[in-house]
Length: 535
Image (tube, rainbow, N blue to C red):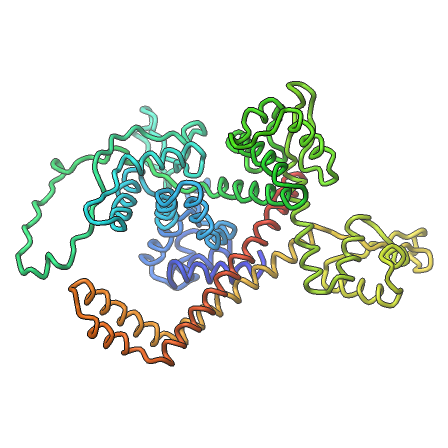
């Protein structure tokens, strides 16, 4: 765990959950698993506040607990899960692209609340969609339920583990210090059969309150009169690994489109779509698919013959990058997508791009050469790269000092005498990737701190702007004249308006930069995880 990761986790926790949750979460990241009393003692926070902070972190899957043999419950924070908060806007946008506004709001509600029942999500989303519709129109619960079922079918949402029912013989035994949660893999995406009938409701408008009529008292709901929740105890959460699988597939399709053409990318997209639910997110290869199956699954608008498809598949299989491989000849030829090699190619392309941007095209040429040839002596680098000896030496030292390449000594004799030792330059891709990941985490932490500074510096102006907007909205609702609205707008002077525009532009740039850096982090992290699983 690096200091850059810890700092970024702390900033994300503070921004989304507040200071107390940040204090407890950061303490657990630094110390590892700890029991409740130790957390209270070390953080010097009240027991009640620590319990509430842990509840929030567990609700959002950022902290897990484990019961040890002696009955002590230890809580452990997961840094990798906290860092995924960065990707929340991307998850929500993906859901919007695939399942329109309804899918977007379902995923947003699940991410904001951590875990929710299906009935609660459907009602909340239907109410939010009804708010945005014209007067007289409402969103039906059945439409939202249908979208939720589609998200579950494609594994974008999944059930949370449950407390298993205790066996009948265990009634006399005392309950464990903490429950053990479990779920059957086949039940993970099983949607309960709910008969949700109703429509989204709008919030009570302020006009009703202004009329001066007293509101009728609500009848008190007793335990008997309160309707039971049909799916009580069945909670759902967003399946972030499935979203990552979708991002990975999009990156591979885009890379194939850039290297070859649109038809090749569409064939690869079809192959990935066919195996998206059947292939595990951490698998190195997709399931083998026959040429005939791929042909039948191509989009309707793609009018290419079977012969042309076979030619494209042969071309993809023969490509040096080896994104697509041939695994057999049955069914017109069996093809797989080599996910690990695809991720490695994307990560290496990212490394090359970073070297080119930071050190120039000549350094990038040397880096690319060492990466392709695996091991090279300094004289070989000069000859192959066609760069003068002095310049090549300076560039190699620059890359070496930045840990982008490493030097390997191979002695001819046991005494390691320099005259009888080969010095070979090589690229340790995993080490270079980790080093760049640390830099990316540091960059995002700096961007968040800068955005917070900009907002804090202009806090008074932002509050004034919000007040003016609220007054304008209420006056427009009551049908105020144009002259009155103009007068309210003039409360913000021209220099202040210019300052607000500048702030908005700067914050938008910082937000866009965060998303771009996170895209780089995703490619590098995916490659690191894939390599570690193969090792």
